[in-house]
Image (tube, rainbow, N blue to C red; front, top):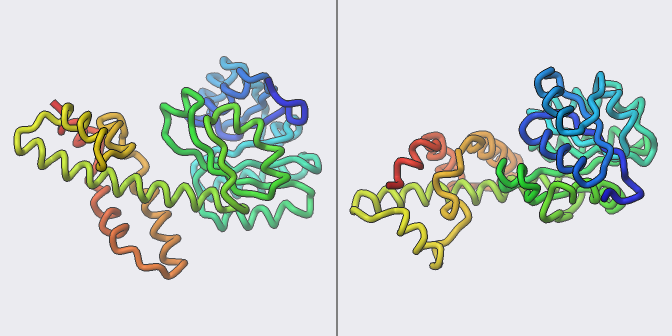
Length: 272
């Protein structure tokens, strides 16, 4: 059940991820209010017990923690700065940015809302859509202790782990580093499985065997299920962070080029 200090939550963006966040919170006893520009998304969310609002600001009137799960940084700015949300949130409320975005976006917005007595945490999620559907994502959370504590019960409703990794923006950085390692592993797996198939090895048996060895990795254990859908975006974000920090990343640059050629069909073709 929802903890007493946070019973009302909001979700802005009711797509594949936002819908599941809201659905899991409903199942854990939260009163969940939501909004999406898509009528179809609103209708689908309502069928899962999410209370649909007429606008972003209407959602904020009802919620103590508001999750933002939209497509990009511009939409995040629009939701928080230009929708009227800040005019209706009460002091002590928390905005949880679950979308993947630039760490600086989270930091800038945290400074913007602080005079209103509102907290911001960044809550990027990892392990993909299947984990989100099952309420088994890992949440990397950045923010001050009080804001994280306020948002934690709601985040726990759809996560198997909630890891507070530092101040605002640290969650986004952690996810970027995680994804750099993920795509490096995926490219390495693709090359190795391509060679194995050319040499006549049954890759299904090979993957099972490698899972017991020192080459085991999460990407390999799920080979054929991962889509590679967000590879280019993930690597673009990571390399931009590296460039801003003036840190040379030659391997990441190579991975960035290679992931552009990966897709689910090419990965599945390596299996019998």
